[in-house]
Amino acid sequence: MKKKQAISPITCSLMLGIVCLGILGTLLFWKTSTGIARASGSPPTGLHVVGNQIKDSDSNILIPHGVDRMGTEYQCTKSGTTDFDGPVDQASVSAMQTWNVNIVRVPLNEDCWLGINGFPANGKSASQYQADIINWVNLLNQNGMVAIVELHWNAPGSLQATGQEPMPDQDHAPAFWTSVANTFKSNSSVIFDLYNEPYTSSWSCWKNGSTAPSTNPCSDVSFAVAGMQSLVNTVRATGATNILMLGGLAYSNDLSGWLANKPSDSNNNLVASAHIYNFNSCSNSGCWDSQIEPVNAQVPVLVGELGENDCSSGFINTLISWLDQHSIGYLAWTWTATGNCGGSPALITDYTGTPTNYGQGYKTHLLSLGSGSGGDSTPTPTSTNSILK
Image (tube, rainbow, N blue to C red; front, side):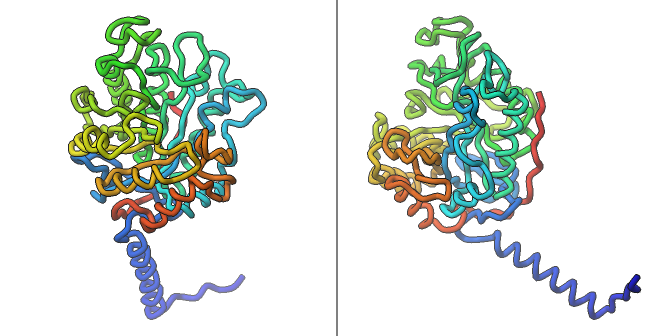
């Protein structure tokens, strides 16, 4: 055995200097003028709302720019499939990083998460579905990205969750959010999007829900509704302080009544979510000025989905320019390699990140924002998540 040698004072000083330089270099890497740089294991933590801004634990402003990654809402309803539509490995996340993505939205299936009504149908259990989602969120976090988990597909009673409903169902949505909140409440780099795209016609229904099918204020919904106030209360009852996103009416395209019906939140951590496509009613700067900017003046607005179905990027270029001018973050639909830039619309043709014609416009814009694109931040590693019920 080789005898250990004592370290001289000079050597120790040199080593200390190297360590200090390394730490300083890390700080210089994170403190950038363009935003949140991404490094392995370092997402922004302590996300919370201050006025109309999202800030991290060091009070740095986060303006998210990212993508929606569909598949986890529907793959589990099919036999003989995985829970994902395409790869969810390091290479696929690295491809997102080449676009300067700093946030990814993960749609969930109510029945698959809870293990009810015959779902998951792909040979996996609910606990395996949950574990797959947790591992995916952890991988995103480990690559410096914030994750949004959201209730996308649901259904009341014994009906299977195979598509979008007008509102969250009272039968299962509270149990879903109790479980999801308990799972991720220790991770402040995860945002909860309470419901994908409400399309009841009543703001009172949106906020307050109903006690029975087709009952006021939810006369246009054929099941008892869990309103947004109820779901906010459900999440907070678990002790979760995570930011909550709430989409407006008309498939989250209408924010006209959002402020007047804003639920109360003991943590004051609510964000208004808008979805904006070229085929929506609110798809021009006049509407954005009248509907979105007044909300943005009081609370943060995050565009959870944007896109266009014409295999071009003219519409989104106009939209994201307006959003940038108003310091509003956004995510584009969808990072799924269907190659269909019309119907989906898909941003990519493969999981190395090759853009469609539509995706090219979005990629070019994100790269023009610089590394991170979201406000200074010196993040620390987040804890991993565990399955809790």
